[in-house]
Length: 68
Image (cartoon, rainbow, N blue to C red; front, top):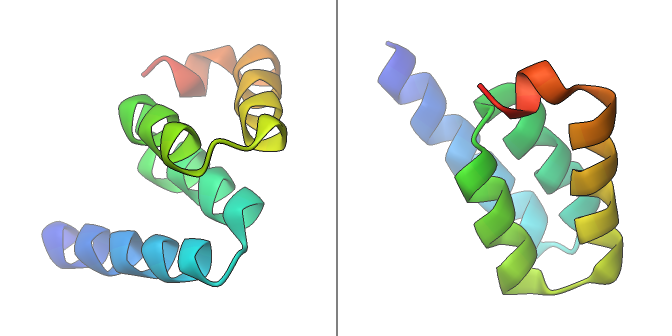
């Protein structure tokens, strides 16, 4: 059941990212999936300074969640 949820969440994140809601997609990657590697890859793919700033801000404000 958890695998289905994660697959659906990943698909949803991909969809909203493709629609241009990059900030919301990044927030979900970090807060729901808690996948730092995926978040970094997402920022690299889209290469917007604002996304990198969001990731850094989130990391500074919630380091325990970002590093798990």
